[in-house]
Length: 365
Ligand SMILES: NC(=O)c1ccc[n+]([C@@H]2O[C@H](COP(=O)([O-])OP(=O)(O)OC[C@H]3O[C@@H](n4cnc5c(N)ncnc54)[C@H](O)[C@@H]3O)[C@@H](O)[C@H]2O)c1
Image 1 (cartoon, rainbow, N blue to C red):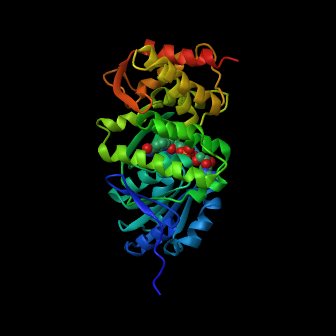
Image 2: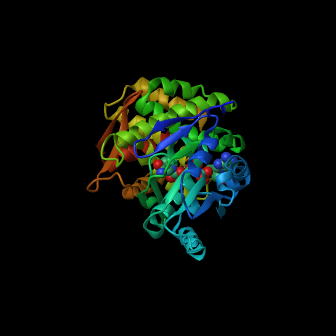
Image 3: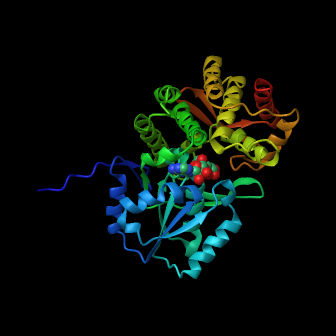
């Protein structure tokens, strides 16, 4: 009697594959069986080690002898002190160049884990097993890794491709609604920059029905993978994925400074997309109807983030360190229709300020 074939398939992200499907963890086990290594370390945060590690160990016997490395949950773990602790731990365990790091977590773990894997002993291999929606559709795909410094996001980092990414959507069961919506923002973005039908499908996304959501997750991951494959080093088309992120990163960093709730990355990107779609309309690049459609969707899904008068100046100030800036000028990726985007659009500080002010007045209590 022949064994039942495993149900999984590969999405080509160029420099690494993304595996999806029902038996994706069995595929991981089979692939690891063929991957010689001296040790396995499993990086996770307190939530993913609690909610996801037991299932990983049950379904992937190859990692059972792996040593878990836990970091506190949240963006603060993307920091130099946490890196130092992990590098020291690895040296204390005499981890060598043939060690393998399994990154089990959300975008914080994939960004941090990719950075650790890329720098430890000038690079060890890693695999990403994303557990949040944000990481499944975006953060774990494409090899970008990094940490934050002095309140500036992702300012120290490198490209370090994982051997592969394994999307096991049942991990999403333990994710809260706020974190699902957080990841959904990047899926909306994928629709806006590449696929109008996907945007419409995300607008009607069944967040309560993970089986139905899985198909949309795979489609978003495929969009991200296709863009990354086309432009692995972000010299052109990959910049499309920065839509919403210029102003979004400014808002996110601003929210870390104040006494209000800190915005999650996706929440900041959602507000950033509203601002940048409006800016695109102001610059004559986008129809008002499409701009309004994007704004309505953002407002329908995400709580407003009220800003005091004057906050807009600080947000623009915080954007001055944006990696996309060129020669002191802001460079944005702005939508020109549902499904298409123009990259490297120059914008002055005054134009960006006006877009943030538009958001501030729109959500004013
Ligand atoms: N490298 C890239 O291309 C890229 C792209 C997008 C985002 N990012 C980065 O990703 C980060 C945001 O990712 P995120 O939203 O996943 O944040 P996160 O990793 O902090 O995860 C969000 C929360 O969900 C918890 N969690 C994750 N999976 C869970 C599960 N299955 N069950 C229960 N709880 C779970 C985490 O512990 C955390 O509390 C940001 O730092 C952002 O800059 C990177």
